Image (tube, rainbow, N blue to C red; front, top):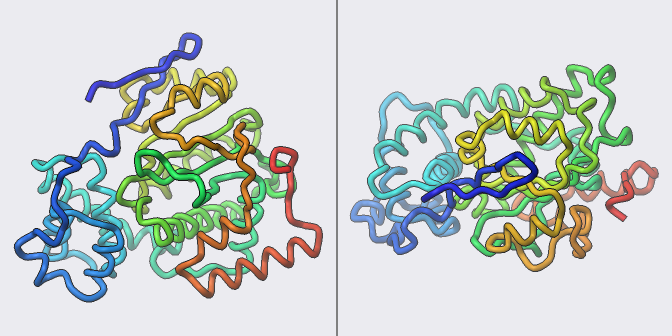
Length: 334
């Protein structure tokens, strides 16, 4: 449909394409004439768990039977199919199948660079994740559900020294670990929350403590690279309290790119809640301006509910950091 905008000073921020644009009456995948006999076993379990449609089945089968594609686990192909289909319409089947094929080919690179396919949570990576969530970045709370079905991810942009070093102290190993941690976190999110791939992710970020000194263009480039390789789609990215430099950054993007990437920004929390009332739940986390107290440990337990070994490692690391006094607790998380 048409783009909508919210005005902030002289900056017009475009809304993303509605992630529910696909025909809501589309039939279940079970109604596909070939799917019932061809999608069985693990594939059937995945299709039912993700509540995939007849459209998904058609794309999935077309890609699965394509020639010269690398061998891929059903889980990965389901994710790639679901993410690529967000916002698609009935006539897009061939185009979406082509996108999925491209995504599948990228997964080998995603694995070699970030461990997407075969990487495992290590003590170091888990420690990074626990500290990151305890500082209020990229948290998924199962208690907070979008009104429109997308997964919600919450962030208070914070780069305190207790978990985020100054640029001169950001070693290559630290940068590499950051990307691997992010990739494995997204992989765990899409395993725990099927709507992350079928509906996409809506992020809500309080920018008041954003640090341009620590989050430089090199960091932005690295983050873009990993986002382009893994099955991930942010359908809307809501920012609150951006500084002047961030406003200029949005303005330079222009309405078309803002719409494409789903960027929208607001002067304050109240205007964001009013402007995004059709998406946001009644209560929002306290660390982004709401009144819901997030239990980080419970959120981590929910994140790893389908990965027993990772869950145990997470619990062990959390306890170690807590006992040693190294578990971060910045002001906005108290």
